[in-house]
Length: 85
Image 1 (tube, rainbow, N blue to C red):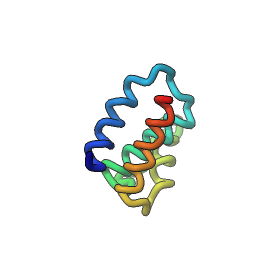
Image 2: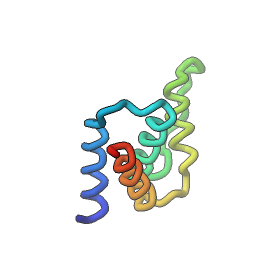
Image 3: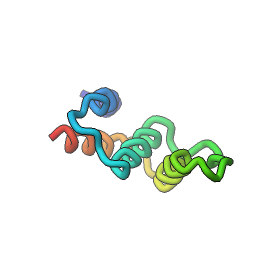
Image 4: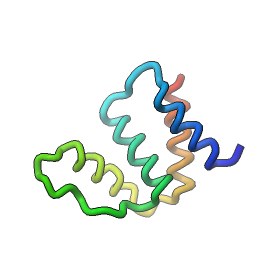
């Protein structure tokens, strides 16, 4: 199975986890998924200073700038496997 297929399968598996991960893990999943599927952050940060969730998501994704899509995909796959137990 190639990396892209494994990545897509991990994305599907992440929606069926038996326990909801904590916020830190959710941010990690989000940022790795975005980096693996879209590359470096390609939008402006949220303009609303009270959009704490949007800012946290933006910052988590921006922190991965420069990481290759392949590396992000593999880390995402590994994290989902770990969460599945």
